[in-house]
Image (tube, rainbow, N blue to C red; front, top):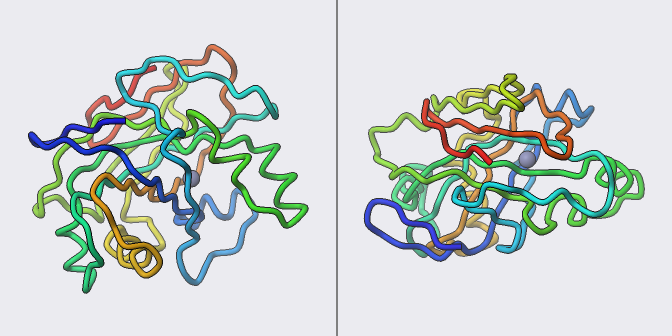
Length: 213
Ligand code: ZN
């Protein structure tokens, strides 16, 4: 998937996702609060552009949950030296959905198995249109939300993150050298819930309508 932001073009690369980054969401799924960020990955085939207006319903499992999240686009290669330096790696921001087959995830978790089947499937990561990041933007005060069939479901603010965005970037780069086009799904606030076939989900970031499939 190609991402254009501020006159630059990026081929979307790896999709890093953060689990349990909002205390109220960790609680609603009866998870412990982590001491360090929980990181998992989705393949690039999980991405769905904001230009695509339909998301296929998975052919396995039955309980598809929406998780609206702020998504960070990485703009340069390397490993940031500090959380302040991490800001230099951000090219753009938007909202996205970390779609999850919750019944499949619950089964995998019970068996102590990894989450891929429930979270990394095709088209499990729709993203909105990216807006350029400027250092003046307050990363710790970004509003985002989602609504299903016109009814508000989730409403978040990055100020409630357990691990703020610069910390996430530093943590990921401890294990993976960052590359332009990498995306980071930064975790979902409380209010996750089911999507049914034919539902219309709308996600919003900073007052802009990012996606309306
Ligand atoms: Zn998530």
